[in-house]
Image (tube, rainbow, N blue to C red; front, side, top):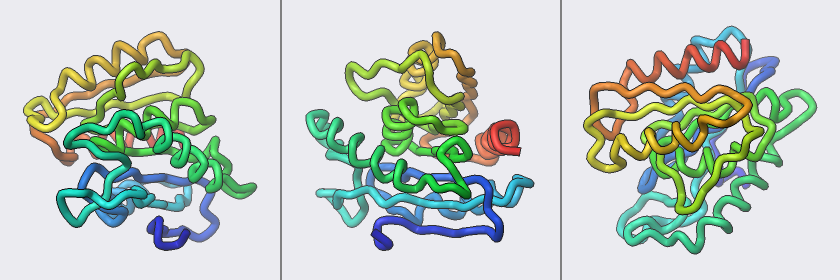
Length: 201
């Protein structure tokens, strides 16, 4: 399984940040972001970037499931596989309750669809969308949604719909839009740092 993830472990790590990359990227894509976030958190943190299981048909990157065209029929299998991988990361030193799941774009959709059913410390979804017919459970971890106002890949309305879907949960759902497109700018990273400090420190 070593080839399926990239890991950076801090000495005496007591928390974990799991990164889920977007469509067409790979496990290395979000590692610089994860490292930058970990440097701002006083709790020693392990960073794990998971590699999507499928090769992207149109290029050299990876995908959690086919997206152009969207292969929605394969989403349940993709979610089940990811859920098992995340459960396998839990340990006595760093339980799932000390784990935050962060996903971008397709990885954000997977983070929400998978992480809302797990006892995680929190979920961060940037430029994310909901899978068809997805319903958020009432009992779920706290969520931070981030989205660019000029995103021409995943429209801003996708996160607004997610916010409405998550509104009735027992935990918070914070939402922040920013000036920009399908990216994770410094403004969004600041919101991520605040969430991580609140959930983990």
